[in-house]
Length: 120
Image (cartoon, rainbow, N blue to C red; front, side, top):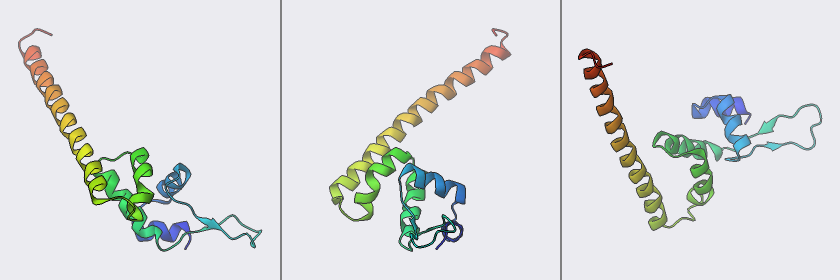
C-alpha cells in the first residue's frame, strides 16, 4: 500500500509517518523495476507496528526509546521480564514528573498569593 493508505488505516498523518520512517522506526520498499517515480510500498504488517508506536508515544515513551525496543518487542524477542522492566522504568519516570509538576504547581500558587499580597 502507499503511504496515504497507511495513513488512513492507522490514523497517523503522512507527515508523521514519513518522520517515523526517516527516524528509522520502519521502512517502505521501492520497486526497483519502476523508474518513473519514487513511490514506496508499505507492508500490511506495518499497521500493527504503527499502532504500537502510537500507543508507546501516548504512554510517554520517546521515539528513541521506541526505536530501541520496537523490533525486539514487535517480534516477541523480549522476555516478559524485560517488557515489564521497560514499563516499570517508564512508571518511575512518570512518578518523578508528577512530583516535579506538584512542586511547580505549589510555586505558582504561592506566586499568585504573593501577587495578591503585593509582594510582587
